Length: 255
Image (cartoon, rainbow, N blue to C red; front, side, top):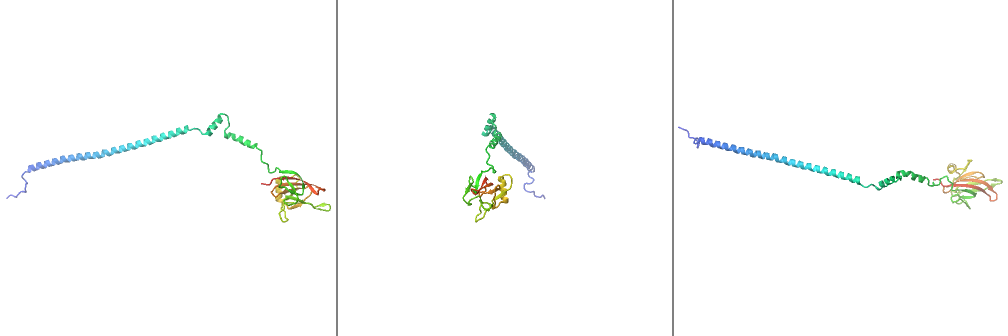
């Protein structure tokens, strides 16, 4: 007894084979077509991005070259402008002076100094303000010229006359310090030559006294209220006037 065959099996075996073969062939053709399309599509994606990158790089290079050209052109223009800039007035004046033989300001400086050196110098500190003879009583050295006062009030120095028998006991007093006091503003000069202003000033500073014996032929250094320095030489005593004749040299105050 034969076994029943499945439905449709064995009826058209060749057709089934052929049909399968056609299906397989058709599948292969379709597969080839799809492969071709995939290859074309892949090629399309590989080519286009490269082109875009090349275009972008070219654009960047062009922009860089353009910037360099503009910068170089600007530098050249600035250099030309600087070179064509008009000279300063001082340069023009200097070149004009040189072309006409006039010395430049630097070379003219010595002449300016020379002109200053020819100016009259200011009075020196040791140049006397006044020098002359006076009757020695109450003397104000701060007036111009020195003056004789009626009392010791305001006097730079004054002579107190006194005599015991035939002996004179006269004294010189300095600037009054108030309440019957006197400042140490007089000093005796024992040198053979007349003292200078500097010598008198130093002598008063180191050996100044309030009062000293006063006698004919002696020299004294005195300082006034305002700081003037004076050298006083005592002359002979005048019996008629009862005063000494004297010679005074006054210098300006120390600075």
